[in-house]
Amino acid sequence: MPFSLIYMTDTKIECNLCGLPVEIFAFSLKTTQGEKLFCCEGCKSIFKLLNEDKLFSDSDMD
Ligand SMILES: [Zn+2]
Image (tube, rainbow, N blue to C red):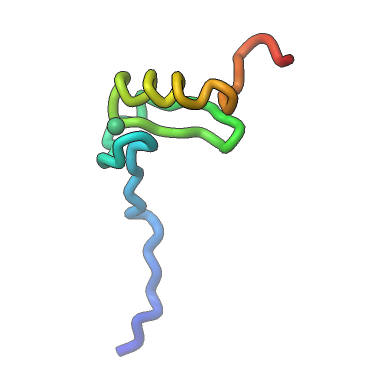
Protein backbone atom coordinates (compact mmCIF):
# COMPACT_ATOMS: atom_id res chain seq x y z
CA MET A 1 0.00 0.00 0.00
CA PRO A 2 1.54 3.32 -1.04
CA PHE A 3 2.01 5.93 1.66
CA SER A 4 1.57 8.89 -0.62
CA LEU A 5 -1.02 10.82 1.32
CA ILE A 6 0.38 13.84 3.12
CA TYR A 7 -1.73 15.67 5.64
CA MET A 8 -0.39 19.07 6.60
CA THR A 9 -3.44 20.22 8.48
CA ASP A 10 -2.51 18.72 11.82
CA THR A 11 0.51 20.94 12.43
CA LYS A 12 1.22 21.46 16.10
CA ILE A 13 2.23 24.93 17.20
CA GLU A 14 4.71 25.12 20.05
CA CYS A 15 5.27 28.02 22.42
CA ASN A 16 8.30 29.93 21.19
CA LEU A 17 9.63 30.24 24.71
CA CYS A 18 8.93 27.04 26.66
CA GLY A 19 7.92 24.66 23.87
CA LEU A 20 4.54 23.69 25.27
CA PRO A 21 1.77 23.18 22.73
CA VAL A 22 -0.15 26.34 21.96
CA GLU A 23 -3.88 25.73 21.94
CA ILE A 24 -5.17 29.29 22.01
CA PHE A 25 -3.67 31.73 19.55
CA ALA A 26 -4.22 34.66 21.88
CA PHE A 27 -0.60 35.37 22.78
CA SER A 28 1.24 36.37 19.66
CA LEU A 29 4.00 38.80 18.84
CA LYS A 30 5.08 40.22 15.53
CA THR A 31 8.84 40.05 15.15
CA THR A 32 11.31 40.59 12.36
CA GLN A 33 11.36 36.80 12.05
CA GLY A 34 7.61 36.46 11.64
CA GLU A 35 4.76 36.06 14.05
CA LYS A 36 5.60 34.15 17.22
CA LEU A 37 3.02 32.35 19.31
CA PHE A 38 3.13 31.65 23.02
CA CYS A 39 1.19 29.50 25.44
CA CYS A 40 0.57 32.28 27.93
CA GLU A 41 1.03 35.96 28.67
CA GLY A 42 4.05 35.18 30.86
CA CYS A 43 6.00 33.51 28.08
CA LYS A 44 5.11 36.35 25.75
CA SER A 45 6.44 39.00 28.15
CA ILE A 46 9.67 37.11 28.79
CA PHE A 47 10.26 36.66 25.06
CA LYS A 48 9.63 40.38 24.62
CA LEU A 49 12.25 41.23 27.24
CA LEU A 50 14.80 38.89 25.68
CA ASN A 51 14.18 39.91 22.09
CA GLU A 52 13.43 43.61 22.18
CA ASP A 53 15.67 44.21 19.19
CA LYS A 54 13.69 41.77 17.07
CA LEU A 55 10.24 43.19 17.74
CA PHE A 56 8.26 45.31 15.37
CA SER A 57 7.05 48.42 17.06
CA ASP A 58 3.55 49.34 16.08
CA SER A 59 4.02 53.06 15.66
CA ASP A 60 7.58 54.31 15.37
CA MET A 61 10.29 52.77 13.24
CA ASP A 62 13.81 54.02 13.84
ZN1 LIG B 1 5.20 28.98 27.04
